[in-house]
Structure formats: C-alpha cells, structure tokens
Image (cartoon, rainbow, N blue to C red; front, top):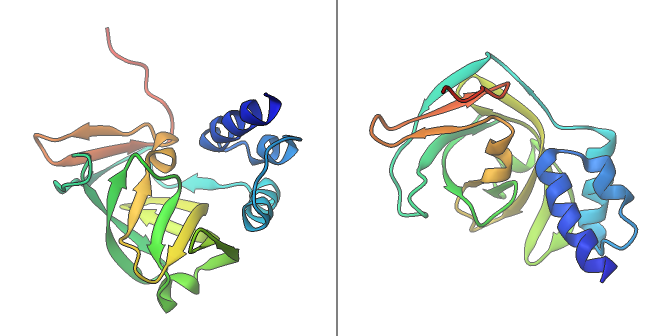
Length: 170
C-alpha cells in the first residue's frame, strides 16, 4: 500500500532532516498541524551550530536507560530524558518555552510546534520539531541526537555530540 510506504518514508526523511522530501510525499496523511509544521520546516530547515564536538553530562534515568541531559530553550534550562520512543522534543508548554516556539495547532492533546532555538552544552539547534503540553516531562528523541553522531559513555556519565560523523577506528 502506497500510503504505508509513504508513512515509513516520512519517518526516514524526517530523521534525515529532509523536510522538503516529507512534504512532497503524495500519500502521507499528516494531520493539518503536522502538515503545516512540515511545510514550515521545508522552508526553514533545521540548522546546528557550535563546536565540532561537545561533551555534556549524562545523568542516569529510568527512561530506557539512555540518560538525561541538560537542554536549554531560550532562558529555560531543564533536564530532558533521552527517549527512543518519541520524535523531536517533548516540552512543557510554559510561557518560557511557548515564547520560543511556533505552534501550528493541536494533535493528540499536544501542540504541534517548532522550537526556534535549543542548546545542548555549546551545541545550538534551530527549528527543532516539538510537541508542547502543560504536563509534559521534558524529553528529547533520538532523531534529534542522531544528526549529532552521539556517543554514550555510561561509565563516565558523558554524552559526546559531533557536528560531523566520525569514521570508526579499526
């Protein structure tokens, strides 16, 4: 079924950050707010900037054992669980966060949004897909971290993020 294939392609393209390809899928049945967000991201591509690599504290947590990192949105700093079951950011819809986001409408009891700027250590991310909800516990999906070639060092409680992929050593 073409719609199933397009839904899977949409997920792959969004992980790759190719929002124009997601928006071009003919049979992908995105909701109104999600479609509006896709179009926004296709016209305003996410960007990352900062040093070539950064190491940040990785606190243990109960969420799939991946850990928790410090995330800054505007002036709001929060501890965000790394959650492999979500995409983008999940954030509380506090005034500090909503003031730093473009909201496109509601879907599944959360506001579909794009956060204009987020920071993990010295790494800066712009135009990050997000869902905002009053009772949300801050979380970050692996799709956000994947583009930063993460290395988890549980022993040292550190997460290393990189601007560019590093070839594995032999």
